[in-house]
Length: 269
Image (cartoon, rainbow, N blue to C red; front, side):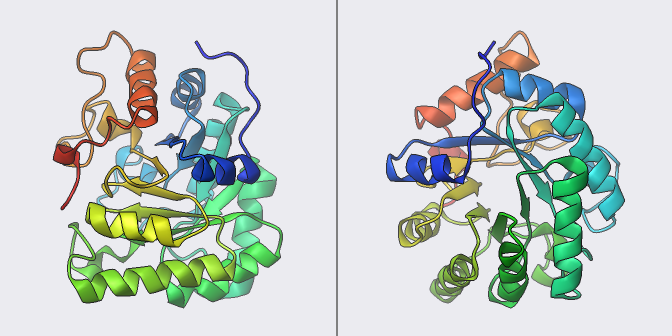
């Protein structure tokens, strides 16, 4: 198991981007999985609103409440006290206004001891990102496939596949960075577009279904352990061929670090 380590911070993440050292994220929503993830060497844990689907059984992430997210984040923090923890802002917790966005972000920090929060959306969310950042909270953006807007974007699928859509995504990414975002997640977009955005931004860019050229990778824990009914193209079952969940997560971390994951078969071109 991994030795007790110093938790990464934003300075370390920026240095890892400059040094081209990939960052390994994973989602977790409870104490035992968070504990194993930390012991296996994961540098960052995202308490994603995906927990609403894989833990709570909702059909989408939309029904997840702020209280449910806080509960999941609290338990994940108890399991991983030395890992950078990110709380995912659920739908309805930040869209209404900047005041609500700050209040709910502070809940993640004060009640669950999160190191940062994440929210979805591009330029239209820049004022909320700025408000949260100005309040002294690290905030991370999320572009591409944004599950909270699943009805608006017409279902799950690859995003930014046209030149026009790719250019818009780049502009949205720059808007979030200028507003104070400290990191950006890109989900389900072509590898070439993700590579362009990663090169364009000064902040770390983390991919999930965005190819190998991002500054790091994140996967939903249940996907990478084969615990979902359908394995997404951008993930794979790391538990297959391994003896334990610890071994599976450790292999994921190693493959991210040596740039063997994601492979072309896990990417969109």
